Image (cartoon, rainbow, N blue to C red; front, top):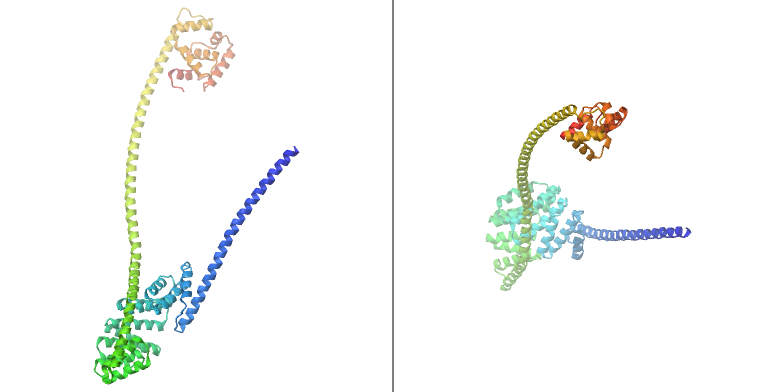
Amino acid sequence: MFRIVQYCSGLNYQSSITNTVKDIKQTRFILLIIGAVAVFGLSACSSVHEARITIAQADSLLVAGEVYEDSTSLARAVNTLTPWRRVAPTDYAKACFYYGRLLRTRTFYADAMRQLIAARHSRTSDGELLGRVYSNIAYICRLEGNYPLAHDMYVCSSQCFAQAADTLRYLIAQTNIAYALAELGDTSGVRALIEPIRAADMPAGVEDMCLETYAEAYMRAGDYVQAMRYASSVSELSPSVRMIMAQCWSETGQVDSASYHARLVVEQTNHPFLLANALFILAHQDTTACLTDVRNASAQRSIVLEHIADNQGDLSHAVEILQQDMNGKTQRWRMPVIGIVCLIIALIVWWCIIRRHHKRAIEQIAHERQQADEFISAREEQSAQLQEQLSAQRLHIEQEVARNLDALRQSAGWRQSVGWNDYEQFCNVVNRQFFFLADKLKATGQLSEKELRLCVLVLMDCFDSRQQAALLHYGESGVRNLKQHAANKLGTTSRLLREQLMKLMTGEAV
């Protein structure tokens, strides 16, 4: 007994050890998962924090008007924030914007456009940031010469600045819109924009920019007098304004004035395009200039044009990327509409199919109900006919039983003291149906032999209790008890025993 207890305790101990090992393995697995998630989370938080530091440095340089030059850090910031663009859309948009701005200054226009488009599609609510994004996109379009697209982007920029309540940048955006309209030759549109801008309370730099744009618009329209008037109204004549004045004087034949402003442009700027145009005017307008100056000016202008031509392919690719994105956006808006229409059509078709199926189901149910009604009517008719047949059969049996009983009473062999065996022989001669009932009752296995004999005598209804007792060799009280037992087994009372037996003979009782 002790060994059995020891063995059972050993099994319990081993089972507890097994469960403990399983719990330890599960705990290790859970801890491993938690550790991996923790390490991944800390690494992600560290990377995101580093990306935000880079963005903060780029923000500080943007305020000073400078460009953050570390392309590696900006690219890393974009890659780090890409998985979190739904959680931190503003940080992601800023990283894409600064990286695109740097690529634009380095003349990688196609790559810059991709980053700017990514910033454009971010879910940021920073209107000022989106306005800067649209301005840089418009600048690339303007360099490529696509002024209608540049005009649309500048309009988006002005809307974003207006939403951000940045009045200064809004006015600058309006000025850029006017510049695009000037490039398109829409002087009336430029006038409609510039006059409200000049009437607004704005810094001198913005007003000078407006005046310069207005002067350039008139110069491109061929109205050199108006162009000179607005160019001379600028508070501080920049090299670009002097270039406009030099071109206007050159077109009106004022050689000395054109040469004067062209020389000042050469002295004040190193911008290749402005410098090339100024030297070209000097070489062709100044009669004292030597052929070397003409060749140098032409060579300088050719270099600038070649540089523009080299970047033209990348600029065209960048604008093509923007147009594809805009068409894709239209398609993105179009696809949900098509999907909704297809869904509505599918619902209508489904409703029609369901309605047709429902109609068929109703017709089928009505047909089945009609068949059921016909079947019930037929069954009722059959039941009525069967009931009539059973009633007629019962009446016939009752009449035949009555005739047999009368024949038994009037027979010469009737004796009061006849025994059961003699009586059975006599009844066998007169009518066999009573003993057929006895065989039928016997087949049920419920009644005893004496009960069967008593049931036959009850069915004949021609003997009183004393005579039944004499035939069965019982006392009268014994016959009453025997009758009660038989009635109980047949599910009735002693008073209704004969009716139950008649039903059994006619087949009405089950």
